[in-house]
Length: 284
Image (cartoon, rainbow, N blue to C red; front, top):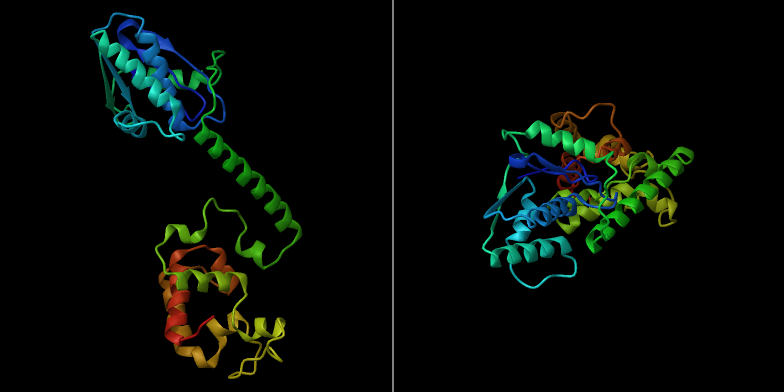
């Protein structure tokens, strides 16, 4: 038996010995994980009608196969098709029919591969649909994706009309905050966030919120914004040179300013900025 899945819209299976094929079109909200489980479930439903002594199902979904190998009571967020598959497997076992699941790497190197891939493509335009309930987990995922998509559209419209600090630094809405992909201390994260927002302890911002009487650098008598602190202040010449060398090593295109560097969303660039703050003993 052969299973395949194309995106989240189809779940065909194929039995080479009898040249039996089934194509199913799924709902858009269905996750890839659930669709893989549905494909296995539908295949088991089909072969359960025959007197096979052994059933072997090949699937490239390691996540589903691992779930099928777990024991214990069901969780409310678990895919219901996992337990339906287990139930069918147990019923078949009582009839003396053994069911084995085997993981294969994307069906590579197996016979009938091209044919099953063709079934996967045809399933999208198939008239055969599986009526199934959307799982709780898939509903949550679908809601989050829809929310993120709508948020992205609104942010694009806003950024087109309002060219400001935030729209320049964050032209697109990421799926996850930048610090999720790096292991950093709380101080590291808060320092970068303050630099990104521009709400930090430097003269230009402190003057803006009426904490200082002016926005001048006490060493240079120039406007002390973040660009001045990182690249222009005579007090920080040594540290600025080191920062420039670090950015060159990161192969960051010139010319540079803080907004441009922050818009890259690069952890290497963030590390360079944090090293500057540490070396210069500046606290923002």
